[in-house]
Image 1 (cartoon, helix red, strand yellow):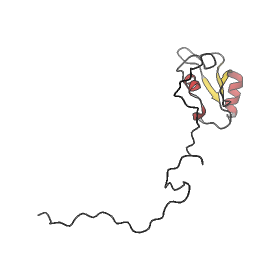
Image 2: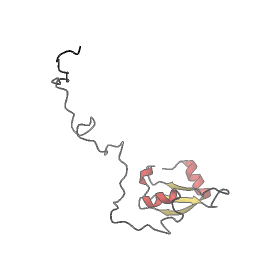
Image 3: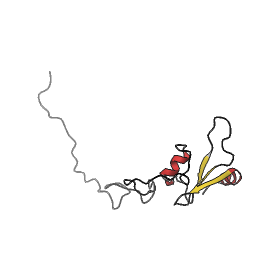
Image 4: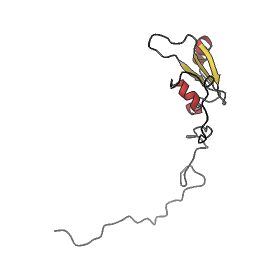
Length: 127
């Protein structure tokens, strides 16, 4: 959820540009650029949890000024190799945990005490 300051700024200064499939809403400043040589301000108001990885690629390129036209005006053609968006699950209970991970499913084997460290051969002394 956006902060009260972001919501107020959006209400007073924002012009809705579009919305993505996840319900995130994208805005630009109503009056365009703030001054000479400055780019227009663009931002997103997330639907639900604020997580940058929830912004789809087509909106990401518009937010970061890689294109002037938003996806609502100039949609990207989907490539056959593209996969649907997946959220970043790092730090959540659904994150990938490799076998043997301390928080993984099941418990890690306890130390058995049978470990023997490597020792160099005790050959003739250098001299």
